[in-house]
Image (cartoon, rainbow, N blue to C red; front, side, top):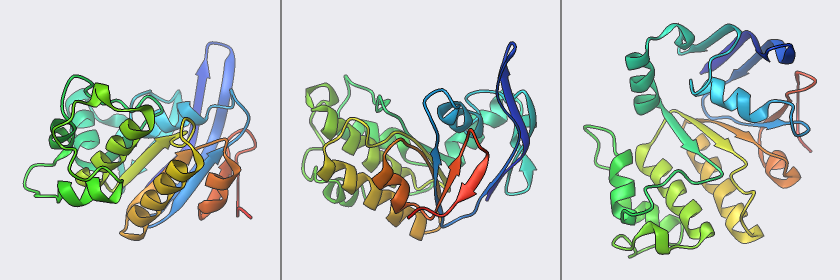
Length: 212
């Protein structure tokens, strides 16, 4: 479970949000919505310790992760977090398999072949990522998430550059991960993605509501 308490973020005199409270429980999918510039991606980055909030707390399993030093922050991201970025964040000159190997946590033996089959890339372990299309690269990034088996997934517009079929598959896999006990947070402008989530949170209004 991740809990945001009285969280605030500002850039100089510009205040994105303040006194923001939000709880995301294991097994839930939550959509972050709001107009461009409302701070959805910044909120995701704060939750993932890629940016530091101006004030407040981020509690993960009862511990305030904003107080962690650099080394423990890296271990927190390594052991608990999974990211799905718009730019895929893959090692482009490496193979598909090498990209999945990077995500494997110590002591685990995930079924990489099953993950690739689930995203429609069965048998393509040896291909270099830079030869793949954008949609295929996003599917590799999704398979990497499945291999890592994180307890918290942060996804930033994960369907933004995809056609409807690939976008639906991404949402389906994230839903499967949430059903297995993962907490999933998705920043999105897409109404279909929002409506596939359990709840939505309007970042600008700081209001949680049930999608249609």
